[in-house]
Image 1 (cartoon, rainbow, N blue to C red):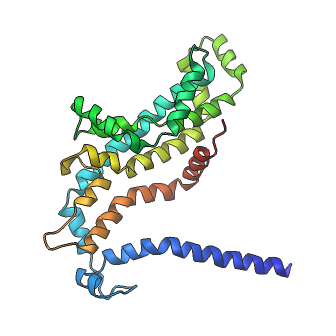
Image 2: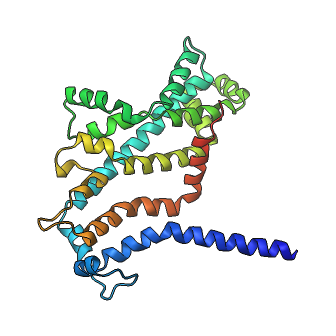
Image 3: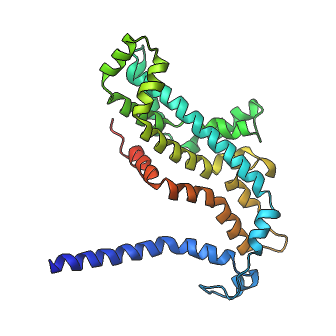
Length: 274
């Protein structure tokens, strides 16, 4: 019993140490953002001598942060809604409808899951250029709409739904769309919520593709826009930290509010069974 108590205490101490290691960079970023710029470059202090919020004033009123927020919200919400709709219909067809080439199509989806998105940026950029979608919301959104892992997760759960439910709905005169949205989707509503949250966070945090496809500050997302915050007299660390904190705040709040769903989605996407 005594050994068990000592082990629990050691485990608690280890957990607290790891938590401090993970949270210290965030603490340091916040402290840096509220220091006067001179103190940032001349002193290394864990508590500011003077609390200065001029960096946040600069970020809110002297940058295009509001436009970057709007662009990120529009693109992230659109990507989330369209990805869920496309994926749920594709997964239902692969799981419940028999048609020629179904296994081949599912094999292609599984194979595309193993292709890194960075390998496709050149062909995607050429395609968006030919469509005239460079520096537009459409150019940012379209290449992010194909997320194979969401299709795969949905298919696994649709496979587990008893086929008798679908047959009974068919006898009642329901079509496939009615069966999907009135029967299958409500049965997997928790999975939909988890996948929607993780898709939204991924779309908000996307950097490489929005960076390549936008060339004006008015169309940049938050993750790209923060790279444009500079000064004629060199790097301003407090300003950079303030902008970065404001850019990350929506995602951080979303994670705090829905952390159980985010964890569930991560477990689903990393533990898929073939």
